[in-house]
Image (cartoon, rainbow, N blue to C red; front, side, top):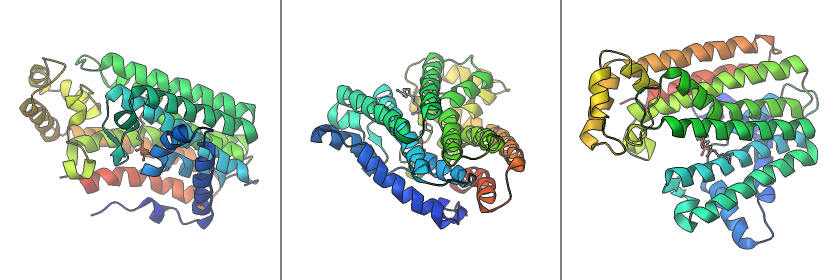
Amino acid sequence: MDAPELTDLISSPHVWERLDRVEKRLIEASRAEDAFLTEIAQHGLLAGGKRFRPLLAQLAAEFGPNLDHRAIDAGAAVELIHLGSLYHDDVIDEAITRRGAASVNSNWGNTIAILAGDFLMARASEVAASTLGQEAVRLLAHTYAELVEGQTLELQVDHNLKHGPAEYYRIIGGKTASLIRTSARLGAMSSDAPQEVIEAVSTWAWELGMVFQITDDALDLVATDGYLGKPAGSDIGEGKFTLPVLLALDGPEGPRISELLSDPPSYPADAVAEVIDLVRSGGYVDKALEAAAARVASAQYATAALPEGEAKDALGRLGTYLLSRVTAART
Ligand code: GRG
């Protein structure tokens, strides 16, 4: 069965109308004096992307009494940070494509990709400072630091067979859940939601962000190449050992997996295929999904403090949606 579309999960037309305004704000904020820089900065925006972070900002903003242009700026700021970090990430990973198009680094080179990423980050701060205030700028700067910390941690454990789930959770907390939490927090702050509501949506979004990455990593092990748009198991090939692999390393299959991955940095395709097979047949993808489902339950628990209504119901549906993406893509 296919996973539902995000548009089916959120019925409030206001959320989608505001997301359209975020799109216009993104185009405006990514414009530079120089047409060449504008083209590069807007390349990743025009290529696509789910706009998951601005969407969370709009949903969270529904909980406050004063919905205005600040929610739009909150959504634009978090997407600009996200896109800037993707430009930098693609330089680090030497990625060829991003969002179904050529990556900026592959089209224009690393220097341009780094500069354009910096430009997007700077514009995120400018957007936040223009209407959202000092606390929002501080929060975004803190999140930017968390992204860098998560990414740096990940680089340190690349190819390392000895790290475990605790390091994995720290990595994905830094590189993914931190910005997802900030997206929801900034959205709720932008509409002057009460403090306890800001805290509840932040806790919810942290758990959701962790689930976002755990399920994304699981997809790499269970979906087809066609679904992923890249070869399945490419995380293993790159020495990125995600939760199912780390759990398998700790099980009876551990010694064989260690042997197969004992000669970094590049592993033969048949070794990667055997690791994937051991991880899948040992039930470790299922175990990772159980951990994700437990976090969906924690996220749900955090929403108890929120006022009843369509926005709260939508938060509840998003966790299930992330889990269902994996079930639907499983081969
Ligand atoms: C300079 C802020 C800064 C960062 C440098 C490179 C880096 C440190 C951090 C990388 C963080 C990163 C790229 C994490 C992965 C996050 C992630 C889950 C990306 C995919 O997000 P989706 O699926 O993508 O929402 P779309 O394209 O739909 O937006």
